[in-house]
Length: 260
Image (tube, rainbow, N blue to C red; front, side, top):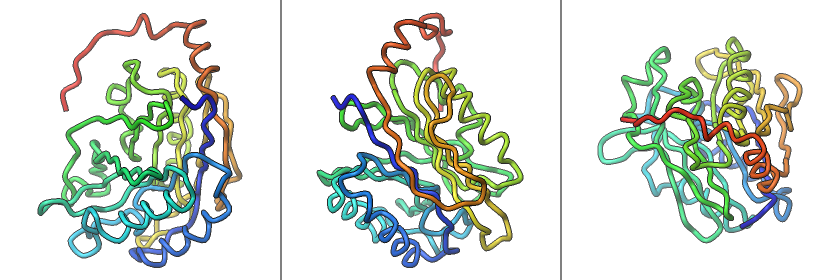
């Protein structure tokens, strides 16, 4: 078990539907993180931006970005994750991929599809809530719109850190910030949300607001609006466990069954 987990948030502008250019950009941005972090988090659909043309722009699972993630994880000796529009057996998913230095790839398919952006008509919803395990930490991966659904994200004593990757427009930046803090507090966990900046090919503007939040709702990383950045925070598992013992609200949580 690693008591301290260093997590790096990479907030950047994305080249619209241009995986090669985005991979090149992130390759450059990540080079300074070798030996400085344990986990790197990239935005939702970090190779294309949030787009509804997977028929022409989705990648095969095991394709170029899959390989790039594995190469970066091995080269930098870190775990690295973000979501990619992915083609799987004749369908398309918004897939959160999480590569580790040993070559393993864990993944989660976005469960809540953003109908207001027509995602429900272009992608298939993931059916399984998953938890990643890395260096003794239990990590819940979530993608953008998932953040609005507290029952799905309820901590059933199965995670210590939630990672939310997003393309969350600036017009709704207040809910993004508020919900990240709320999820951290109600679930007594760390929460890291990584969004993008800039304007996409549809004219939507993104303010960023990537945050790292502790289990009390305190902001550990909160940069200026509209600024690309790479920043690392150290999260402490012992401090989290001690807080849960001292304030065991989880013991009074309601029992329920989650059906996807």
